[in-house]
Length: 136
Image (cartoon, rainbow, N blue to C red; front, side):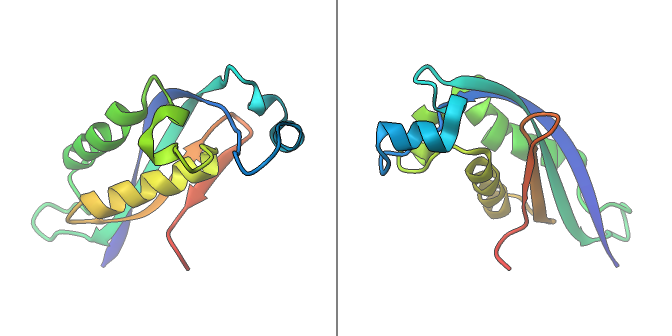
């Protein structure tokens, strides 16, 4: 029997949306105020969903303490209170929330066991959220 467990985390980070492949004018037209040279910040909510068989002994898909530890070590400690543009991951990748969501998914999918990371959802504002479940 497969079941799913989701947990929410919070982190604050800044970024500037800017692509070196575009001119300054094209960047302003594409990203608007998010292209501010000084950047801007968000209080993100990161929702992680793990899926797997319900363990007959524990009755759980995964231990939430283990998931918390993995997320805190690999995501929160890395990105909280940082400028995403300065992270090596975003040296050649525009730090949009779409890209942040995909990268968090990839990081956790590689690291977390025994359950499978099946979805990451990142809420950027009360109106904007992004989710990624891997390649189709």
